Image (cartoon, rainbow, N blue to C red; front, side, top):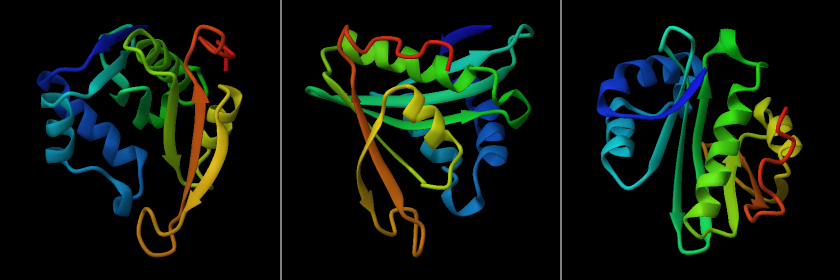
Length: 155
């Protein structure tokens, strides 16, 4: 499997992942993904052996703080380390561009919370109604320096 920079040619596949990866109230629109691809974000995809997009992640950085904005993995491919490989690639990228920490928001009931914990992210706060009324976000962060690089690689 290959991790690749996402391009506009991947937009349909990314939107298909988004549609099966999130509840309707928290899905990103096609325009939001198009903006991610056209902007200054670092968007990567994970491809299967047939060059089909089975995962996508979006990252950004401002000075010493990187953000993990989105990770989506095809439901049939979950539990195979695809999400971890995308997050680890993002951590490596963040360190390479000078970030010292990475921040993310996630719903507390999202199974990805376990993945983030295994990768060394720690809970730092809760954002009430972040995803809409009654849908809070857990805020997590971790270091991205060389001592933190590729934490729990097999997670």
